Image (cartoon, rainbow, N blue to C red; front, top):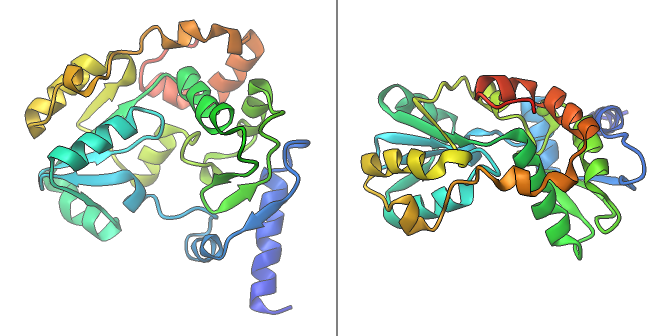
Length: 245
C-alpha cells in the first residue's frame, strides 16, 4: 500500500466513524484540497485563520462566527473600512495590539438558521458542501429533527463552520475577544463597535435585534431536540450567558 492509499484509508476510517448517520448520507467524496489540509493539519478542514479573522483599519480584528450576523457585518466592513484577511502569521503580528470583537447567537436560533439557510432554502441543490467534504443529502426529505440528530453526532474538530461550536473555534485559535456582541441585542452592541470603526449604525444597516426570533420558530423544537442542542453546545450556552430553556 502506497502513501496516498494509506491516507485514503485513514480518511475513510475517519468519515465512517464520525459521519455514519444513516439515511441522509448516500456517499462521501473528498476533494483533493481537503486531502491536502487533512495531511497538513491532521483534520479534513482548512485552517481557520484566513476564513475567520479580518483586520479592520489596522487596529481592530473581527472574529467571524457563522450565522451570527456575519454577512451583514462583513459587507459593511468591506464597503466602508480597510480590511485584510489574516493568516496565522498575520494573526501573530497583529493580535497583541488590536481590539478584537465578535458576535454570538443563541445556539437554538443559530442551528435553526443554519437549517433554514442550508437545507430549506437550497432544496433544489442535492449536494450541500461542508468545507472540503460533500455529503450527498436528500435535502427535500430531511427534517429539522434529522438535521439536529446528524450534527449532534459530528465532533467540532470535523464540523462545518455553520454548526461548529463558537467556543470551540475561540479556544482553537486561543482568542479571548475584547468585546462580544449578541445577535439578540445587535442594535445596542453594534452601535458600540461602529463608533470605534467609523461605520454606519445598526439602523442604517437595516439590522434589528432578534430577541423574538427563536420564539417565533418554536414549532421546530420539542423538548428532546432542545436537550440534544443544549448538550451539543453546552459550552456556548454557559460561556455566552444563554439559558437552557
